[in-house]
Length: 345
Ligand SMILES: [Zn+2]
Ligand SMILES: [Zn+2]
Image 1: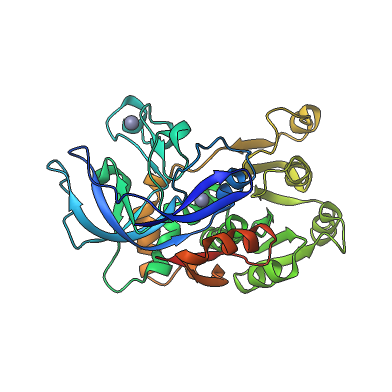
Image 2: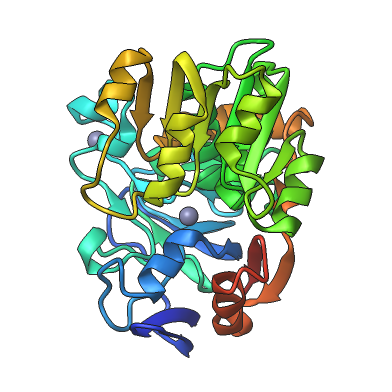
């Protein structure tokens, strides 16, 4: 089958690899019908995430079930499904507490041997272990483009918004209008804020943010913290959702929030350690939350919200390309010439 593989830092290639098959009794084999390129894929491309040569990339995908192991109960061949970007066992102590992303036996798709040795979804086929805990059925009539993002970035955006503790009437600041920031902007609206400021420097992304209910703040034109303060009579936002991970963006997310407010960080940190404004956090009684998304907990309700027309995550798709063009897709996404790219095998 065709698959996008990691070759070396800065080098990914579509090549022919053996078609995978189910190994465990809980596995499902999917024929991938749509995959997406994610910011995490660029971390691998640039060598910031360890990856073995030849491993198949891609962790955002939907597909049709072709085969299932003997113990899979929720799915059968022909089912149209979306997968989380990681697997969880579903029965360890942490899964039973509802924290599937902290599972003692997890693996991440498309991240090679260092993260569980799972295959990737930028391919014609992928095997999903622990399928009953990792996948959800896509409601009848919902398209691949509508469903695909519940497996990663839509769940992450919702997770960020939920943990920002937005109350009806609040002012929210979303830092970053990349795919996750746009999802956070969309999900924030479910909690009833009066205004959602979206901070970025790319005009095309800010335009989409505006369509999704955000008020753009372009950091090329104004200082973002000053702009939020000016718009809130000098008080600041009630909460912020940090969707970049670069330390200056985290700093903006902390400084644009009022006393007693909440900062919710979902961006992947760009450094292991760094300065943290302990005195400001203490003086202003701020709450700081950080973390990567516990996707399995959110897929079902988000699919229901999409089915009901309350969320339209497909709006952020800027480019539709073939798997054969994946190398070019990575280059374009890396150069910020595309907001979000989906790939058809
Ligand atoms: Zn992703
Ligand atoms: Zn577990």
